[in-house]
Length: 610
Image 1 (cartoon, helix red, strand yellow):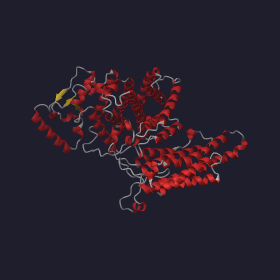
Image 2 (image 1 turned 180 degrees about the vertical axis):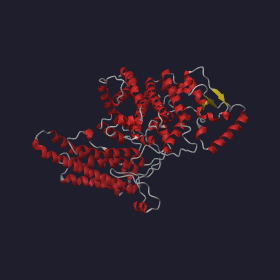
Image 3 (image 1 turned 180 degrees about the horizontal axis):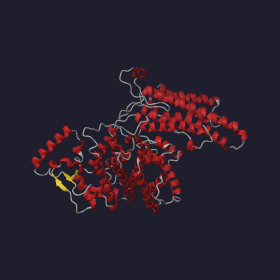
Image 4 (image 1 turned 120 degrees about the vertical axis):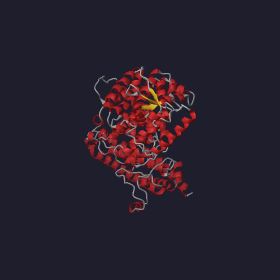
C-alpha cells in the first residue's frame, strides 16, 4: 500500500515537472526539487519490490524523467554554443560544457550506487562496474567472504536461476553506459569521435547483454559504439544480435538498413585488386550481406561474393601474427588471439542472420513454419546458405593448413555454424535440397569438417569430458536465438565477460572439439561417429562388449561399421578419384588404422550427396 502511494506521488511530480520544464531551465530550484522527489520515490520502489517496479516500468521512468530529458536539454545547449563561431561565447561554451559534465557525473554516481544496492537487496548478479577489477572467488569461510557477505562479483548465472535484480541491473547498466558515452563525447569538442574512449560504456553494455541475454537493447547500443569507431562489421553484427534476441530491439531493423545504404553508396568506388586488404574484404562482405538482407541490387552480388571470398581466403591462410597485424588499430602486440576469433565469429554470425532473415520472410508469406523443402527451395535461402558454407570451408581449410591444432582462432566460429545446423535441423534438411550449387557446398563443408575432426582425435584425449563449461563463443553469443538450443545447460560465469583473459585454457579447447564431434554426429545422423575415440577406456570396453554380443545375435550386421581409405590420403581425394574404392574392414581388425577411418553412415551420407 505504501509503495503504491509512492508511485502515485511520483506520477504527480512527473506531471508537474513536465509542465515546468517547458519554460524553466534544468537547474531551476523547483525543477531540481521535483526531480529529487521522483528519484527518491522510484529508488525506494526499485529496492523494496522489484516485481511491482517492473510492472510499472519504474526503471525506464526514472531514467527518462530524472536523467535523460535534462541531459538532452544540456546537450542541445552545448551544441548550440559549440556552433557559434564568436570568440565572445568561449566562456559560455566552457560553462555549458561544465554543467553537462557535472550533471553526467551525478548520474554516473547515482547508477553505480543503484546497481550496488539492487544486488544488496535482491541478490548478487555478479556485476562489475567500470574501473573495478575481477576478484577471484574467496575460499568458503574465509575472512574476505565473510566481510563481503559472500557477494563477490563472479556469481554464476545458470539458466533458470536468475534473481530479480538481473533485469534491473541490466537496465541500469544500459543507462550507466549511455551516461558514460555522453560524458566521453562532452569532455572535449576538438577531439574527433573516433579518438574518444568509449571503453567504459562498452563495458556496461556487454555486461548488460550477458546477464540478461533475452534483451536486444544492449546490442543496439554496442552497434552505436561500433559506428563511432568506424567498425561497420561490428555495427552490423550488433544490429543483427539486437534483432535476433528473444526480446528483439525493433528499431535495429531501421538502423541496419541505414548503415547498409551507406555501405552501398561506398561500394561503387571499390577498386578490384588481387592484393589483400581487410577494408576491401569487409566492404565486399557487407555489400553481399546488403543484397541478401535487403533483397536488392542483385547485379552487384556475384562481384561482391567472389571478391569477398578471394580476400577472405587470403586472410584465413595467413599466420596468426599476420592476421593480428591486419586487424589491429594500434600496436598489434596488444591485439590478442581472442580479437581475431571474435572477428571470425562476427562474420559467421552475420552470415547466419542472412539465412534467418530469408527463412523468416518465408514464414511471413504464409505458412508459419514452412517445410524444410520449402525453405531450401527459396532462392534467397539458397544464396545465403551457399555464402555461409563457403565461409566455413575457408575456415576449416585454415585449421587444417595451420599447426595450431585445437588452438586455432577459427574453431569458435566453426562451432557457431555447426551449432546453428543442429539447432535448425527441423528447418533445413540438406538431403532435400534441389540446388546443385548448395549440395556441392554442403559436400565440401562435410568433407572438410570430418577431415578436420579426424585430425584432432589423437590430440583430444580419451579422458576429456564435456562438463558444460562456458567457451568463448558461448560467452559471445549468449542469447542469440538461432542457436539457443546449443546453449542449454551451459554454466555461464560473469568473469568471462569482465576479466581480461587469454583465449582459453587447453581443457576448454579440447571441450570445443568434443562439442564439434557431437554436432557432427547429429548433422550426419550417426551416433557412432568418433565414439570410439572420445569415450573413457572403461566405457569403450563396455561398449565393445555390447557390440560383440549384438553381432553374435545379428550375424554379420555389425561387420563393416567403419570404412578405411585405401589408395588415397583423405576422403576428399576419394571423391575426385572414382576408381578408388574404400576397403570394408571388420571393426575388430581396424587396429591402428583408426586415424584413417570414418563411419560408414557418414561416408554414405556424403557419397549420396556428392
